[in-house]
Image 1 (cartoon, helix red, strand yellow):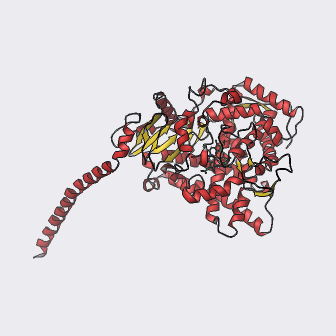
Image 2 (cartoon, rainbow, N blue to C red):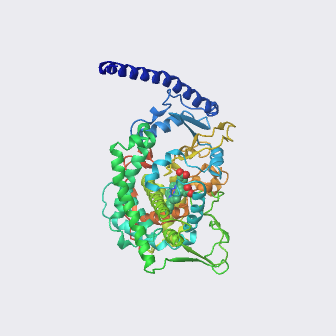
Length: 558
Ligand code: HEM
């Protein structure tokens, strides 16, 4: 064959091969698609029976999630109202089935379960930040780390933090004094909660913190924006596409700030360990020895729910202390456990520190900022909180004691009502490995679906809370709570994967907020109906948490 002839043959054979490829590809894709649909027949059949808005072919209801985060939040809430008479609502995001639950009976089935504990696929976006920390991990790793970490938030450890809670509350009051007009109180709450976490759970001295607390809080806020975008914008979900966007670059810069702080904290603590500085140990007194000791087996305090329905119990409520027991704060315990390298590795410590720093600050910053906003709006309710505080503290400017926090019953009801109307974690998502029957309607949610506990909607059920949109702390009067389904109020989730920081958060919030209200009168120019809400992972006010302050008569001493 001549060279010229070869030249003519090669392209035509390539053309034939390409044609053949496409001729085979099309049926192969169709066959694969048919097989894929068949293998998901069970999922489709069960999903069909659950109510939900009609979607488009292939993308399902993904268009509902276009626009800014406050638009998305408002649209989802409005859409939810169309399904008021249903117990659950399904949506499709491409091939993913999401089932939203807001009936307490169905919520109980998921949250109380030791089987449905796997987090939804969406949590993977947290991985570069939180690794396989407690929030995301599952199986044996989650179980053993939960067992290790939960006792570090034991009430007896928390009591040892009270002086630091007071000192930091006093510090934020001093900073707030410079505000004269309307300002966003969330920045102050964020910085304050980061600093408290560093000093308490991490045991890092204030003098080593410099400006990093504020920088850290701001970086976390921007990270949450990026994660929210990845949750709602379908094209940002695959890593392959995301890595080419400007967001990936920004994420790397933010992670440098965030991990910079956690690495610094761990390094500092390790140096202290090496230099022989002993971690502060909290001794749990013998039950019979002390009037401060709590009854064995149960550490819940009579009349104090620490943020959940009083009938619910989790591993934070059970106390297996027998006689005297030594307890360490969070990072001290992790480092001590790692000495032999058996229980927890260095990488795992970093993941857990990142997790506690995030979960422990952004949630409480949002909760306290909503509380102050609501106090500013409801002056009559603020009067009652102040009256209670005056009864407890009289004319004294002394710091709060643990006993004082037990007496802040009305303030606690206001806090619970804030968490009802504006739960900082507005949804919780789990991946189902088995079908689940919903007690509310007998229908099944298929394995493979993502179950979303819609806490925000659950907390506003008219059949559970009279006037559900109204801020009414009396919703948490013991007689009103008594007959309520336990799972109708779950701001801290519930069951085996409940929030480990629940008691820490409630105690800390009571001290910060009471200190602020002992020093300032809070005002707001906006009403709840003016709030524009957005859920960038944590529920927030899009316009910022604008309040005004006026000094009250005196300043509490730390
Ligand atoms: C008002 C404050 C808080 C609220 C409303 C809150 C709420 C929640 C919720 C709803 C969950 C479950 C999340 C999910 O399953 O997706 C959770 C988990 C968690 N929270 Fe909190 N939290 C608060 C404060 C804290 C604090 C102060 C800490 C630590 C100091 C903390 C540490 C954690 C951890 C580690 C988990 C994961 C637990 C596990 O999966 O075993 N939280 N929190």
